[in-house]
Amino acid sequence: MNLKPFLSFSEISIAELDEWKNQGGKIAGIYCIYAPNELIRAAGIVPVGLCGKKQAPIKDAERELPASLCPLIKSSYGYAVTDTCPFFSFSDILVAETTCDGKKKMYELMKELKPLHLMHLPHTQEGDAALAYWMEGLRELERFLFEYSGVAVTEESLQHQIRQQNEIRKALWDISILAADRRSPLTAMEMLAVQESTSFCVHPETYLAQLTTLKSELETFLNQPDLPDQGGVRILLTGCPVGKGSDKVIRIAQHLGARIVAMENCSGLKGMTLAVDEAGDPREAIARRYLKIPCSCMTPNPNRLESIQEIADLFKVDAVLDMTWLGCHTYNAESTTLQRFVEDALELNFLHIETDYSESDEGQLQTRIEALIELSE
Image (cartoon, rainbow, N blue to C red):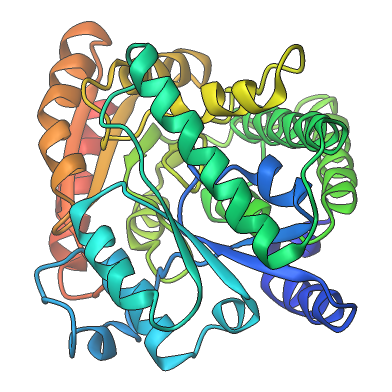
């Protein structure tokens, strides 16, 4: 299987972004899956993910931000303030969101570096008022995008982007299911690269073709007779976003012989089965789809429990590992609700881990994850 386009997505994306900029194209740096790709691309702008997922820039961020903030916020700001992330450097504008108090205050500082639009999310997904509020917010975003690209969003362009992004999400979901097959050779680290790459594609049609090829290659491989079972306790990883540099929990679980077969987080399966309705008003359809994303910033958040149950059943998991970052109050607080649901309703073993990007607690994490694995065998 050819995983090079996904394992090397950073290098490939940088080259394509450079070409796009040289042709006069605009780039929007985004920090969250609430940022509507369809609307941004319909405005002639390429969205690229900017979340910081490495330890190195945190020390620079802590000169201005409290040390008690979560590592994702500090890493993101550290990259921005030092201009050491090529994707931040390429970005002409930033599209941010009010998913937590720490990020909101960080964005107040970040807007001094580049033009920034802050999407104000409602606190709940329920009721007509929340939808109306969110739709008005997306109209404000559309006006901001037009100011920088000069490209008016048309219904035709929106419908094209909706169809394309739906196809990409569907392909990623199908690949995730195939990769979780007991005979699949793909590791969680390789699937992390595949899932992360969606935030860095400049040309969606090329990316979709690569996903289609990978899916076909996986299907061909799995159709071979007498493939061995890869074995190992099957774990569903949920919680905060992970990525290169913040993947220690995945590495530890793999080292201990477990298989993380599904990752229900912002850089993984969260919201992946939520398609934008291709009939009717495309702007309203986009608003409805993104408002359903099961993030812990929403209260109540029953969609997350439904998503966890769907994934646990479909991916046939043996245990749930909830990994949250220190200082991420919403996900840490919601872990109590999640644990009760997993243990009582799903009757699965559960472990909550609160950590950061450093390596100082890896020994302790290994002991706790090993206990979860032994309990689930």
